[in-house]
Image (tube, rainbow, N blue to C red; front, side, top):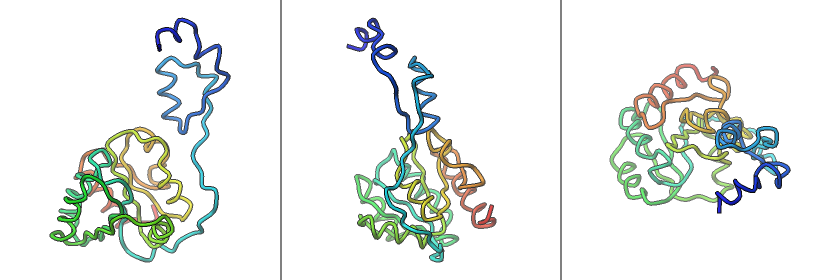
Amino acid sequence: MIATHNHMQTWSKAVSAYIALTRFARDKFIQAGFPAEKILIKPNYLPTDPGIGEGSGNYALFVGRLAPEKGVGTLLEAWREMGNELPLHIAGDGPLAPEVEKAAGTMQGVTWLKWLPRTEILQRMKNASVLILPSTWYEGFPMIIAEAFAVGLPVIASNLGSMSTIIDHQRTGLHFEAGNSTSLVEAVRRFIAHPAD
């Protein structure tokens, strides 16, 4: 099927435009042979403004599916070292829920909130100091980043794929090496020491 469309030049002749969510995704399409002049970038957005938060809760927040590709293992390993330096609240459910539940019961500074409705997530985001996004895969354009920016919440994210282009390092958040818990600890400690940077 793909070979047929390649032969017929469907992608370059029959399609007038492609939409990519980020510069990173656009570059990947171009690398795959799609015509650069037909690829437009249109990021995700929020239909309503949730309002700016105060960030007075003094905690880091993870929101997402509790799965290996979301970097949950890296997150927990980092907080084994971080402890109460900055408490971590984890909102979500998934196959690694038992590990997160165990960590919340045995590690200082880790709280598992389980699955929460969006309105409560937004409120917790408004109270949080920073959002942690430790994914080990590219991601598209996570809505959680758009929501974080909308409430004025900085993001510490893996320097990988779309996250590396959405998060402006040292302006809207910080990058760390994907899958590297030591790098995540360093980024969080930098944030604690210089929250305005």
